[in-house]
Amino acid sequence: MNFVNSMAFTAITFVAFTALVALISWWKTRGDNLDTQDGYYLGGRSLTGPVIAGSLLMTNLSAEQLVGNNGQAVRVGMSTMGWEVTSAIALVILAFVLMPKYLKTGLTTVPQFFEQRYDEGTRRLVSIIVLLSYVVIMLPNILYAGAQVFVNIFGIDKMFGISRFAAIAIVCVATAIIGSIYAIFGGLKAIALSDSINGLGLIVGGLLVPVFGFMFLSGQLGGDGSFADGFSKFLHTDPSYLNAINEVNTPEPWLPWPLLFTGLLVNNMYYWATNQSIIQRTFGAKNLKEAQKGAVFAGFLKIMTPLIIVVPGVICALAYPGMDWGSGDSAYPMLVAQVMPKPILGFFAAVMFGAILSSFNSVLNSASTIYALDIHRPLFNPTASDARMVKIGQNFGTVVAVVSTIMSPFMLYMGGITSFVNSAFAAFNTPIFVCLLCGFFWKKVPAIAAKIVIPVHVVLYFILQFGLRNVIPALNNIHYLYFTAILFVFDMLLMWVIVKKHPRATDFELKDVGAVDLTPWKNGKIWATVTLLIMVLAYIIFSPLGFGKSEKTTYQNYLENQTTASVSDSVQ
Image 1 (cartoon, rainbow, N blue to C red):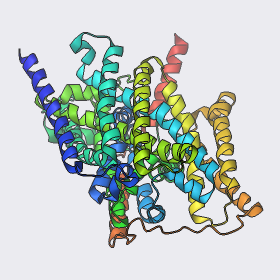
Image 2: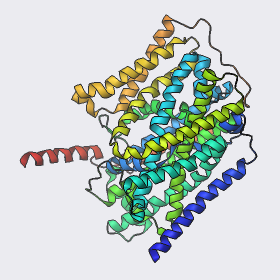
Image 3: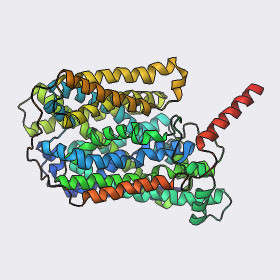
Image 4: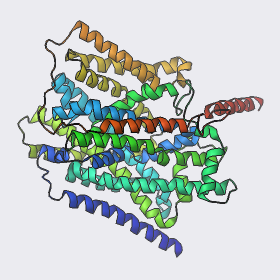
């Protein structure tokens, strides 16, 4: 009976919080005009800094990060925090270098800039690449990863006596239906508002996991079960797990220190400053000041997110020493199921659902935006009204939602192919960012440049990542972000050669269309500096200068264990 009451309470709190978010989002947007291009796709250019920051964070954070990053942390320790903490650099650059230029042009989509700067063919090329990555990879993966979390944490298959596939399919369908309502019928403002509310819930709910996790760790290691004792054991049991500075030669999932400001920075610059599903929030800013506030505050929040998506993984590693975690993906669901009190499990479920929804509806809205404005209008109906384009985007979003929902549960049977395809799509990120960067700052770049740099980069990336690795065994342990860093330099040099050989006939000029007020945030650079100093402090804390002081790193321990296992196999 207690189990039934507990599950009923969990279900009620889950539905109540989810409904509350929907109600607030509807109430705040009920009078908005969604028949215009700016109204539907950019929230009427009315988004404020806190809303932008919350939406940026929630679009980024989803089940993949909660499970995946903690899954890496249980194997390698705090190293994986680099993916989060160094995002602050990219967001600060976005705020003060790129955002004034973006808002000056009054863009709705990134591909629009590629037509302004290069030509219509480049816009179409970039649009198709980005759209395919959203429809075929990102949306099904978001639904599947989210469903995996729910099934693992809440045992939906066992609860209802159904197969794992059926349980995953049910969660995928539910997520897609609710996410589509926001994305298709509510527009960007409804998405951004729901993201902000869910973001607060994620921070509160997410922080409860390490809080209860420290208490659990204390009990596991023979302590008194208190938060203080658990925190002390977290800091002193195995300091190697608290060292985020990894050796130059460490492979994935470790993050070698030279990559923090090279390959990882390039990766982050594409994600935070070029990726439509992210950047669209800042395009909808009320003015430049609010856009800069949102980006800088999001950077600060990214420095804090390791508390939610890295620390729980380290807690698992310390609580179960010597355990073989495999990919590590079971660590976070296992810890949540173990430590989260049943009375607040429903709230946590709603928070998790909100995180999954956020990523899904944001990417779906961006896919609709790109199709309607960058493909359909220029190719099929150049004179279409804004209202017609909104309808086209809604129809396309509906089709995409159905297709991605059908695809998502079948990823259960696809093994590691998702990781392979995600790595393959990384081939397009760097050259697109290079073309955008050079397009903004080099006035002589000709239209042909993008059509050369993008395909050449793609070919070279595939040769390095998937060709030479099979031929040269020594390359197998090289982190793929080294390839990103090397090819970024190559792309820039190639672009320079093209400019020297075939410069643009007339200098490109960035015109101010007067979309929003471009007055910058008065104290913005001060707050940006403070944010970056906090980022540096985080690395000092989790380094040999701070709590990560140990005789050996986690990678050295890994190599020793591998050697011991090899010797043991040879003896047998």
